Image (cartoon, rainbow, N blue to C red):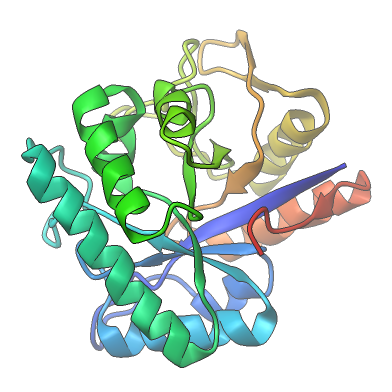
Length: 252
């Protein structure tokens, strides 16, 4: 039995740093690296990619709405052609940096509000898919487990990876609880680790109302900007390995 463990990295800007990329890269098997639209500057992104290359961690383009002020967490009504071009631009930028760092981009994971919007929104979802296909149809799309976007991407010929979130609460329907609501982000490393072991082993997770949610996931995300993110990721990794669940990148 195996599963991928991923984190959002490269999200600092200039002298301001978010999270501990080096420590997280010692734990995860895949790194969702910012592309400059919601966070990240060229020098910092290059350093994160170089660290990922040294550790053999798979790299994904963490594409976003153009929203630095809101950290990419504000929904935007973007025209389809504009969104497709934005996705192409971001993937291309990260591909250039990755090549210089001695690695390559193997998948795409939308960030924040874009991720949540395309989970259900067919128009924006198709625009993102079109951008990925235009750059390289061999790229994998990472999306929310159980969401319609995964079927739309498969229909367009893309390989997909279903993702679950270690440190986020779920609604009974399988959506993420809004960050605006209390309890949306989980902070107890032991609770998070136990939830992810059950998810990987049984395909189930407890929803916010206490009900049991069936959720088949290929990758687990631990957010790099959460308080205690490194401790949480390390605890989750160890708990999975204790159950003989291997941590393996889905797109090496």
